Amino acid sequence: NFSLYDGINIPFPDKSFENLVSFAVIHHIPPESLVSWLIEAKRVLKADGVAIFSSWDLWNTHKNQLLKYYFKNKFSKNFFNTSLGDIVLGFTSHKNTRYVHSYTEKELRKYFKKAGFNIIEIGYKSRESGNRNILIIVN
Image 1: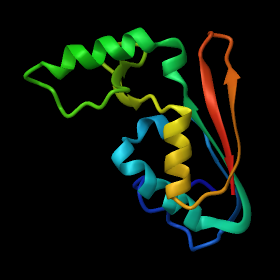
Image 2 (image 1 turned 90 degrees about the vertical axis):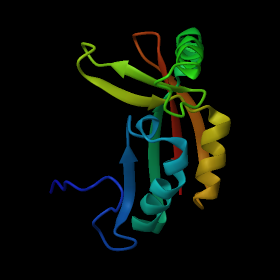
Image 3 (image 1 turned 90 degrees about the horizontal axis):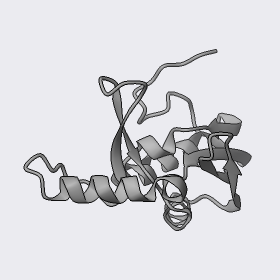
């Protein structure tokens, strides 16, 4: 079954799933909202369940672009409380943009622990493009 929801409250009862998979979602959630989102994911995961998350590792391949974006916008009239690591990227064209926060492994460890997850493993997966993802396996 496919379910569409608001992205905040997962429409399933507590402990509904043995496994959760979230690929390429975390980096679109601002740091101030991530713990709440992870707590909700943990709520629907069974006590002995396992979850796998991935996040882009932009600090590995786009560090200069992230720093340039931050400092360019930091002193702009249109600055919207951008945190270091925040960026708005185009998706095939500049007409279609989306928010991204480039989490570090250290940040992710902190947020997953705050949400009550036990971290089983954190690693990196390189892609053909030269970019890489951070993979987090938790229970």
